[in-house]
Image 1 (cartoon, helix red, strand yellow):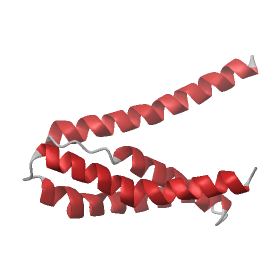
Image 2 (cartoon, one colour):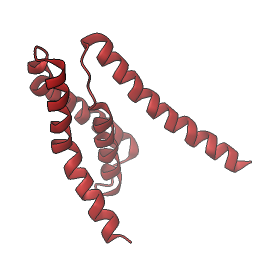
Image 3 (cartoon, one colour):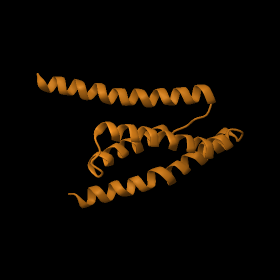
Image 4 (cartoon, one colour):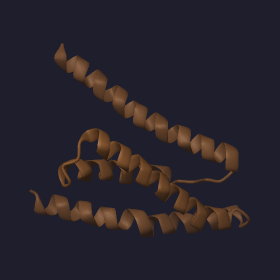
Length: 123
Protein backbone atom coordinates (compact mmCIF):
# COMPACT_ATOMS: atom_id res chain seq x y z
CA UNK A 1 0.00 0.00 0.00
CA UNK A 2 2.86 2.36 0.81
CA UNK A 3 4.42 1.62 -2.58
CA UNK A 4 1.26 2.72 -4.35
CA UNK A 5 1.15 5.97 -2.38
CA UNK A 6 4.83 6.58 -3.14
CA UNK A 7 4.34 5.92 -6.86
CA UNK A 8 1.32 8.24 -6.94
CA UNK A 9 3.29 10.98 -5.18
CA UNK A 10 6.21 10.58 -7.59
CA UNK A 11 3.88 10.62 -10.60
CA UNK A 12 2.05 13.73 -9.44
CA UNK A 13 5.29 15.61 -8.73
CA UNK A 14 6.86 14.64 -12.07
CA UNK A 15 3.64 15.42 -13.91
CA UNK A 16 3.55 18.82 -12.22
CA UNK A 17 7.05 19.58 -13.48
CA UNK A 18 6.07 18.57 -17.02
CA UNK A 19 2.94 20.72 -16.79
CA UNK A 20 4.97 23.71 -15.62
CA UNK A 21 7.32 23.41 -18.58
CA UNK A 22 4.40 22.95 -21.00
CA UNK A 23 2.63 26.03 -19.63
CA UNK A 24 5.83 28.01 -20.11
CA UNK A 25 6.11 26.91 -23.74
CA UNK A 26 2.47 27.75 -24.38
CA UNK A 27 2.61 31.18 -22.78
CA UNK A 28 5.79 32.26 -24.54
CA UNK A 29 4.68 31.07 -27.96
CA UNK A 30 1.14 32.37 -27.50
CA UNK A 31 2.23 35.85 -26.48
CA UNK A 32 5.42 36.42 -28.46
CA UNK A 33 4.92 34.03 -31.39
CA UNK A 34 8.50 32.99 -30.71
CA UNK A 35 9.68 29.42 -30.22
CA UNK A 36 11.79 29.24 -27.09
CA UNK A 37 13.27 25.90 -26.10
CA UNK A 38 15.22 27.27 -23.14
CA UNK A 39 12.55 26.46 -20.57
CA UNK A 40 13.77 22.91 -20.06
CA UNK A 41 17.35 24.10 -19.74
CA UNK A 42 16.45 26.81 -17.25
CA UNK A 43 14.40 24.28 -15.30
CA UNK A 44 17.40 21.91 -15.25
CA UNK A 45 19.76 24.67 -14.10
CA UNK A 46 17.31 25.65 -11.38
CA UNK A 47 17.12 22.09 -10.08
CA UNK A 48 20.90 21.80 -10.12
CA UNK A 49 21.13 24.99 -8.07
CA UNK A 50 18.77 23.50 -5.47
CA UNK A 51 20.74 20.25 -5.46
CA UNK A 52 24.11 21.96 -5.00
CA UNK A 53 22.67 24.42 -2.51
CA UNK A 54 21.48 21.57 -0.30
CA UNK A 55 24.40 19.15 -0.77
CA UNK A 56 27.47 21.35 -1.20
CA UNK A 57 26.52 24.54 0.63
CA UNK A 58 24.32 22.83 3.26
CA UNK A 59 21.46 25.30 2.82
CA UNK A 60 17.97 24.44 4.05
CA UNK A 61 15.55 23.34 1.31
CA UNK A 62 13.47 26.48 1.50
CA UNK A 63 16.46 28.80 1.20
CA UNK A 64 17.89 26.78 -1.70
CA UNK A 65 14.56 26.84 -3.57
CA UNK A 66 14.04 30.59 -3.09
CA UNK A 67 17.64 31.34 -4.11
CA UNK A 68 17.25 29.10 -7.16
CA UNK A 69 14.03 30.87 -8.18
CA UNK A 70 15.63 34.30 -7.87
CA UNK A 71 18.80 33.36 -9.76
CA UNK A 72 16.88 31.54 -12.49
CA UNK A 73 14.57 34.53 -12.89
CA UNK A 74 17.56 36.83 -13.36
CA UNK A 75 19.10 34.36 -15.82
CA UNK A 76 15.85 34.19 -17.80
CA UNK A 77 15.57 37.98 -17.95
CA UNK A 78 19.19 38.20 -19.10
CA UNK A 79 18.65 35.59 -21.83
CA UNK A 80 15.54 37.41 -23.03
CA UNK A 81 17.26 40.78 -23.16
CA UNK A 82 20.49 39.59 -24.78
CA UNK A 83 19.27 36.83 -27.10
CA UNK A 84 15.56 36.99 -27.84
CA UNK A 85 14.80 40.70 -27.99
CA UNK A 86 17.32 41.44 -30.81
CA UNK A 87 16.16 38.41 -32.80
CA UNK A 88 12.43 39.19 -32.86
CA UNK A 89 12.81 40.99 -36.17
CA UNK A 90 14.88 38.19 -37.77
CA UNK A 91 13.42 35.40 -39.90
CA UNK A 92 11.93 32.45 -37.99
CA UNK A 93 14.18 29.79 -39.52
CA UNK A 94 17.35 31.78 -38.86
CA UNK A 95 16.26 32.55 -35.32
CA UNK A 96 15.32 28.95 -34.51
CA UNK A 97 18.58 27.55 -35.87
CA UNK A 98 20.79 30.13 -34.19
CA UNK A 99 19.13 29.84 -30.79
CA UNK A 100 19.16 26.06 -30.92
CA UNK A 101 22.92 25.96 -31.39
CA UNK A 102 23.61 28.76 -28.91
CA UNK A 103 21.59 26.93 -26.28
CA UNK A 104 23.51 23.74 -26.95
CA UNK A 105 26.84 25.54 -26.77
CA UNK A 106 26.18 27.67 -23.70
CA UNK A 107 23.88 25.63 -21.49
CA UNK A 108 23.95 21.97 -22.34
CA UNK A 109 27.61 21.44 -23.21
CA UNK A 110 29.12 22.23 -19.77
CA UNK A 111 26.38 20.35 -17.92
CA UNK A 112 26.65 17.27 -20.14
CA UNK A 113 30.42 17.18 -19.56
CA UNK A 114 29.97 17.46 -15.79
CA UNK A 115 27.38 14.68 -15.77
CA UNK A 116 29.64 12.49 -17.89
CA UNK A 117 32.57 12.98 -15.49
CA UNK A 118 30.33 12.56 -12.42
CA UNK A 119 28.95 9.20 -13.57
CA UNK A 120 32.30 8.06 -14.93
CA UNK A 121 34.12 8.78 -11.64
CA UNK A 122 31.38 7.54 -9.29
CA UNK A 123 30.94 3.97 -10.45
